[in-house]
Image (cartoon, rainbow, N blue to C red; front, side, top):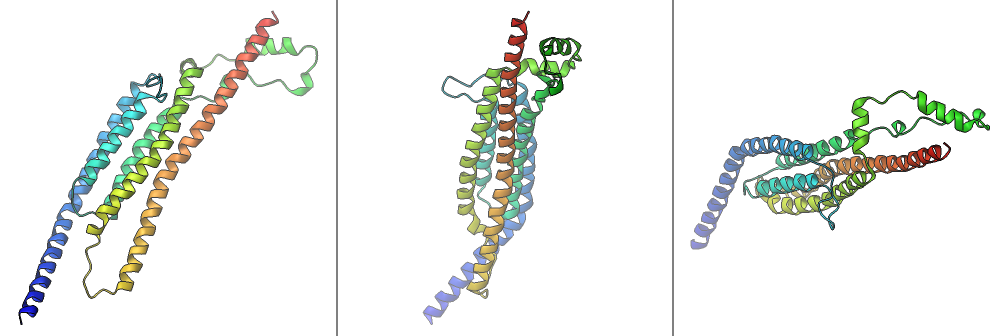
Length: 266
């Protein structure tokens, strides 16, 4: 009889705890989402401010990336810590909102970096056609340089800022982003694994173990896809920007050599 009473009390306690978790989850769910949305605006504002102050000088002799990217990751990591420090029931919707904030923040920064670049064709005019490669090749080249259309002031200002040293800082910054993305993703995955069980308490003892395992597998696949989509796009964007800058540096060096050759012919 005593055993039955203890069992019933245990069942009642479990149901009560489960009821509290469900109630807290329903109440906190929109509050957490509102908090994440508020952080989104704050991070974007901070990202824009940090980028506007960037002069593309290395952080130090040991750390060759830009100051602005360090600030952006600092605020992102601070937000992630605060998110998981809420200690409230969470589900995949909250994780999706957090990753969305991270994606838009880093993508905004990358797009700002890319927007400061110019097409490499602006460095020097296109090469004359092969049929003109005769003894008059140098005069033709000189003539084309003289007759070239003046660059737009905006483009010219960008070109003045795209020195080799500052382009190298941009490259280091993009590589820093790729490196930090791996660290950030690993940290979020580990933190999510710790809070995830509390978000999966909405089941009753009548549910079969097979159904629970199937649901858990589907949830894991959805989460993996969510991480892959978010972080892979940022990595791909950073890689494309790196390739564009490398191509630009190569063309910049070639154009400098061409100018020297032309000057030597005078």
